[in-house]
Length: 396
Image (cartoon, rainbow, N blue to C red):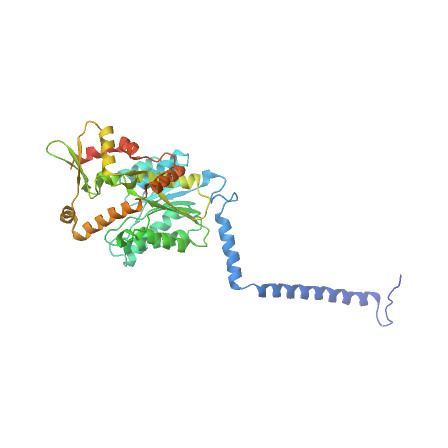
């Protein structure tokens, strides 16, 4: 073994110590240079993508099927329209599956309203607030009021059933509301999944707000990791009997009940109960039957003409005598003005054309039942609800 001997001017300790320091410093310098070189290769967009990926992973579920934690008891839900038919049915479904009532919250104009009180008595959290822009949608104060209500409703929740209320006087106003809705959802860090009650594009501008909201919502939620199902709903069965304050049935002097719609007697249109829309939404949030990213689904309960509707009414309610008369355009004009009358006629024409391919519509009905097997056809709906509606008609 060869030994390196020190020179006469240095000792072994003095010779070795400086060399050890040099090697340590050299290795540190090289390490720092490598780190600097690596970081210089990362662009701002790359770092942003890494951050987004982390955000998306925080919203996803390890099993790849949906956004939920394995512990379903901790999942929190926000249901819009909880005192109405759609939202109320969504809450009913969630509670029927064992969701803890205090894990469900909804928004209402007045917590003192009877429907709101009933929800609170069941343990649901009822928040007072605004979910519709009052007056001019350009009024910033009104917009901020709604935004604040949405922020409180969505704070800390995992899943949302979202609804916007149709504004027949202003599709722009409803679109602004929908845009605000999805902006707040995107900014709510806990949210993982949304089901939105929307509709197919019709080509009628006053009816296409929900299709426009869907387009806007997809854009806003893109790359957020939030999953959204868009439900394209059909004509409400409830609206065959009563639409707002407008009654469809009239009790005639001879005791018969006359149904009047701007629809030929044998023309079929797709229908669904508003309650079943909410039940579908609830089932999607809990059972997550979809595996793809952002589906849009037509949900239909039955294909019904006035003829079919009245035949079932006669079968289920034989104590009543029913007849039909197609509403004339002049009658609509007298009741609601020419512009609204034209809108109604166009609406029924679109409903018919969308489902003129009966075989295709029947497949959509079956697909709807795969989402929720208990969706009602027209007979099941009439058996459940129609007598109460007929009773309401006699009170007009």
